[in-house]
Amino acid sequence: MDTKKVWFITGAGRGMGKIIAKAALNAGHKVVATGRNIDVVAKAIGESENVLIVQLDVTRPAEAQSAVNAAIDRFGIIDVLVNNAAQFFGGFFEELTPDLIEEQLQVALIGPMNVTREVLPVMRKQRSGHIISISSGAGISGFEFNSAYCASKFALEGWMESLSPEVAPFGIHTTIINPGFFRTEFLTEATSTYAKHSLDDYKDRRDNYMSFFNAQNGKQSGDPIKLAKALLIIASEAKPPQRFIAGSDAIGIAEQKIVELQAQINAYRDLSSAMAYED
Image (tube, rainbow, N blue to C red):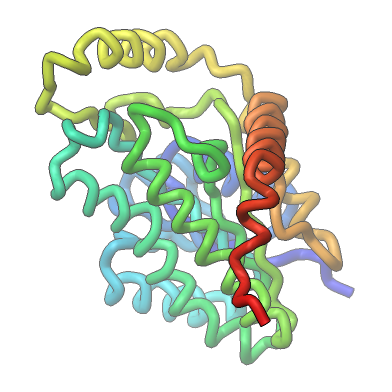
């Protein structure tokens, strides 16, 4: 049985997408590497008979359709879709303009939906496939100064969890990836944008968060090469996990969320359980 697969990766020009693409290629897989700027993607990934570079802005449905068609024309199948393309818009909710919030949702939620919508007919026809969406620790728990980003990741996870049973009868698996802080280009100007409208009441906390993110940039504890290798392992499994929490910091976020939810359930269990009609 041929264990080599065709990987379709969004946002492959830099950061985690580039590292995943290179890991897949080094493992002998074929890769459709996509990004908004094909010159950047080509420089990042290089040329190979196992590589197809395709322009793709995930927020544009027509480009998603064209990219998937190009992948099928070249390789005939798509085994693994990695919804990786990302953008971070930081700021307190009152400081974030509606345009910034909409752009955050377009990139992190609507974009993966656009690409997945085009890939699903291919996978249904194959009766096989694996959809991997990169979420975040911010998809598990909300954080101040991250309201738009958390909203997009919470929504991504709700969509993925709902999609999973819809497509399972066709042999299609889904996996949500929850990374903690990994040492990629995520906190650089190329990927992160901060609200320009600042309110005095938030100033001190805003300054603290900006200092924190600037200090973290390039010093994150997570090794993205190890995360890429973990994705290769997960994608090779007959029954991959519906969720993979990556990094000890992300595990800490998830465990704290469990504790908080259980405490909130217990605190109002009697009141919550008394909501039914009386016979």
